[in-house]
Length: 268
Image (cartoon, rainbow, N blue to C red; front, side):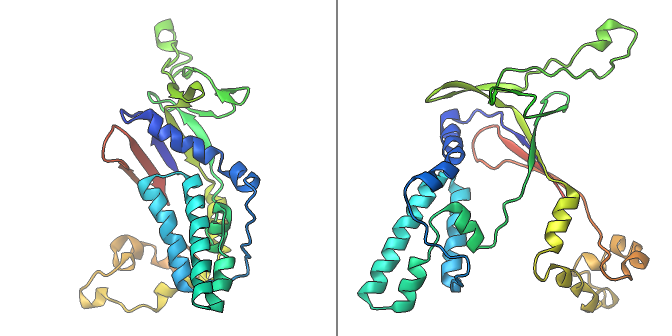
């Protein structure tokens, strides 16, 4: 779960260009005429998987568009096929021909699940939450003020005023000015997230491995959360197998070196 503050002095056009590319990724992947020969049953060797993972990390680090990532994948595929043919390496040619050419196929190859988040618009002043549908007309955001009343039943009319803070900011794009939320709150159901985790192969077994670890605390060492006082306060509950403890964390950070842009995360 994240709360994202998009107010920034950084170049809006730079960030907007990335937004526009990401918005049209799905259409580009299906309509650009590129035939994706990726087969989900292909068991790629570790160097290929490391390469795919590096490309995704590289894109996230340097913030280049998904369209650029797909172009790079096509080039790498052609390059690997050429190398395989030149050196008559049949296995390399087979793996190269099966390389993914869409971001969805790349995620599937790396077994990365696309998490389903529900996004909300957040008032930057009072933190009131609004659905995206409430803030859109004709499928586009429009200028909107917060209507939340902290004291709607107060006897004095001055205390019953709406918050009034702007929920949108105006961004200039190639196609004209558009509205964007100042703050966005992506949310995922805790129940759905836990259900998704427990369905992953080996997840439940890994959660029980701590029972077989050495008792470092008896030796005077604190090596992991299992040696802490808080964990041991729930020893009776944890004696039963498949009982889980969840911890709630919150942190804010600035993902960019320049600009007044911050992202906060609340996570279990």
